[in-house]
Length: 487
Image (tube, rainbow, N blue to C red):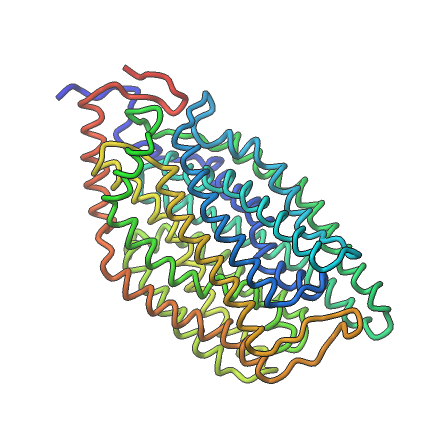
């Protein structure tokens, strides 16, 4: 065996600087200015501002988010084939930032005076374009973590920073939008329906325009502050090599299957939260405290994630988080309408589980990259993350549609120009409570049962990583992240 090259560390990124960790978190802050805005408010915007029916929106979510899932696969292939002087991943973030945020602006600007069929066409086209560009930014961003470091602890810091950034974005956008809509609802009796709609539309227009500036700055800082450090033995990965790598990646399969069921409940909740605040808690202004509880829990827990991972390991921590989701969700479903404080407590319990488990998934995905390289000899960050993201998008499609369809089954009445604030039937309230509480609990149980078989513990990951790096050093022909040959 040849001696290791001094230019090649045994563990890449063993000690990441603070700027790298902060920069990575800023990337998900920017991501969520578009993503969380959509998951939290888009269903509400389409039904109560654009005037579309819940059933039509549910079908659109299913179709377009399925398209988004396949867009992830395309993005993963493009990433695995790329190699530039800036690395494989960062150029996508740099050049995709402004187009992504501008498409978010277009998505929340459905023309008011168009016929319903034209509105639906506009909605399909803008949301599909947003999903494509989001994939071209998010797949490289998600893949970047596994290329920045091979340390379990440092990866835990990156995913904690990522989730902290996303949580802050959620709090910011909710408190920019929900209280202003609530204030308008207080004046609704004295406002003409058309003027009310115009003022709500103005809130979304102003917010999405501001996000173009704020989000672009955050993305640019991610580009400048984060660096790829893991060396590889090939510049690109062929489609056949990618398929071989993924086919033998058992940990990735278990992770995707468990994620599918857990996130099914999570994504259904996103679109239903505004309805829960409005019709169960009594005022949409409660969406602020709801988001503060969920995202605030994430902010509080994020600094402790590396220590929790070190103490329990990611696999055991995943299971405990699922249990919190079950307890909080069941309790939330049986909480009577109008009891805001108990509802917020149970949301916090459920939110703690969701915050931790959703963060752990990204750390687990990064570990499966090393497993795939260990099995096949080919490193395929883009395709691995794309498959993981594909699963999330499929789940987002089904979960988002399920939330909308549950409203339709419950007899939810959409706002119209003639009846801008309809009284909802009891069945619609039950459907909202089921979507927010019981559905996530049931999905979490299934996810926990699947993840019980996940084979890649943190100790096993370290063994695989060290063995793979020793092989690469012995073989030589190493390639730096910027494409330079190291031998």
